[in-house]
Length: 388
Image 1 (cartoon, rainbow, N blue to C red):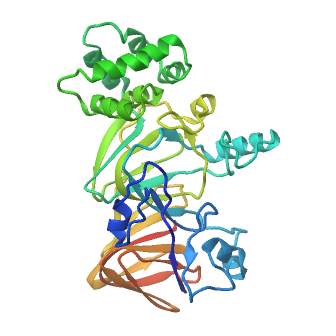
Image 2 (image 1 turned 90 degrees about the vertical axis):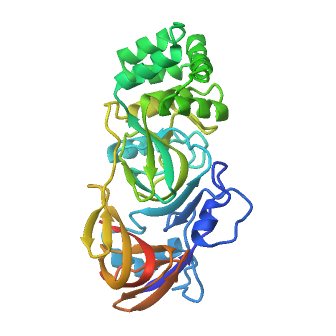
């Protein structure tokens, strides 16, 4: 069975005012439109479009609390993923997400301490990890992701310093360890504040800046004096082209800098922030969850699983994202349980065992657990979020 669903974009300050509405063929709200959530997450559950309301369920969260949700089995009362359309006009915070064990432990600690779930200083809003995929839709999607080889950071520091010696303390710290460098940058000491200011000042004078140095200048314009400006020098700087994807597992420090994309993640709110934000930053807890080993850019390559069907499916996440170009011959899509459909271009017909739904650009639907195979026809571009 199919349920047509919709939602209103969340108006976080960093969001684009036009990108989501242009993608989906909607009227702009006039406010920032940062994220369109499609799923059952209580923070912004999708609205079930009338007259398809089932058992009095006005949202997918309601639906999962009703009788049909028992078809999921294993006691689950929510989707194992959250699908988003994300549009960033400004950088998001530098952040990381916990492992399942860290999330369970952190949630239990804050519950025992009596920290309210809605407290702004609460780190763990639930017991779950938050691995995520981002697939670029815009011609360019910029991001920071994971620690790069310290030798690359040191080379940039030397160019920025230009022999002044003002960054010698930063250089020595990076040579010692990435973990101690982050702790020092956020300790609020006079020395660390001087270094943060000096990096930004000197970077503006570099005649031919590297992408990482140019990022420092841009971030300092938006967040002057923020330690996250210097943290960006420690991270891989990457520009995705339309259709390219990254996978951000637990412990991978990252920040989306700008662009439009499709994001699929576990349905969790557990975020440990490390700068570039007015929100709560808990440095000791961030250091506890970070993976400090330098790693290459975490590209995620799709696998063609059927004609016209590509699958992004990181191991161990419990979810997969399918990109479907049905074309004239159509496509058959195997799904792993309750799923979300979204069309971002053209239109498609999706046929299941209990009927057919027509989806045009900007329209979305929930697929109930009884469906296991979908026949897709039409010339549109369909995204399918499904359990792995």
